[in-house]
Image (cartoon, rainbow, N blue to C red; front, top):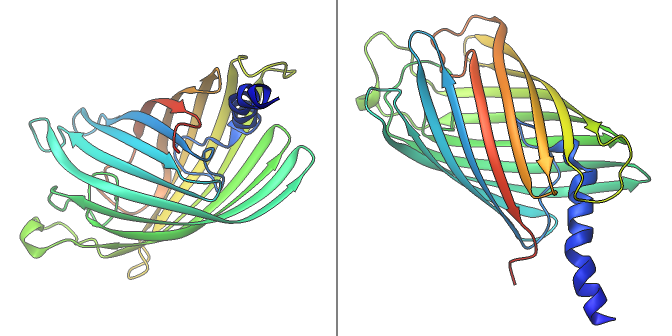
Amino acid sequence: MRLLKLLLIPIAIAMGTTAQSQELYVFSEPASNMPAKSIGIRLTNEGVFNPKFATRTIPEMMIGFNKNLMIHVQGFFSDMDGSYKAEGASLYGKYRFLSVDDVKSHFRAAAFARISSSSRPTYTEDINLEGDNSGLQGGLIFTQLLHKLALSATLSYSKAFERDSKQLTGMPKPDQMLGYSLSSGYLMLPFVYKNYNQPNLNLYFEVLGKTNPENGHSYLDLAPAVQVVLNSRTRIDLGYRFEVAGNMANRYTKNMYLARVEFNFFNVLK
């Protein structure tokens, strides 16, 4: 009996991950966490084409301590300022404080916080704590799963740590920013779930926005994406975000592609 339970543990974890794969948003985080006692490794590449082609690489480790608490540790490397070099690092933590479960549906609510450090000079009033700015961020996430459809909303506040020595002449100094997003994910394949080895195909559509509360400058992006999940352990993302409205100039994340691969190792922490 004990051997049977040991064999069923990874299968149950993988099946649970597959059933909720449409919550694995590409440009935002859901309120749900990765399985307890698990480790995830990500490698993200993102880039822009205007005014010149430039890319950023983000290696990342994720740790799920239990069903409610997980952390992300990120590093940032890019050629945004000429030669390819290390830019900084970030620590992200998320705590799920509410779970309401039903048949083929659930609701989750979580609080998150991030602290980031970056060596980049200041180019824009936008605050991007994944490579461009040093600062603090906190917020709330609400996610609703309805069978094959997952909907999520995020609200956040960011405060920059920029020093005057990093300020470029003529460029606005980032100070604080309100962030918000609405995300949807739909499980396209498989049509009928049989086992956790089946590939999953997810389609995403996200609306991403920010507002500077001091002057009202803001922007709104649309971000479609496609995702493949293999064996409930390997995840491949491809997405593109583009601005549809806004008056915040020279920001890095405007019209940006994103490509990511992620590997998950379940039940590895004691």
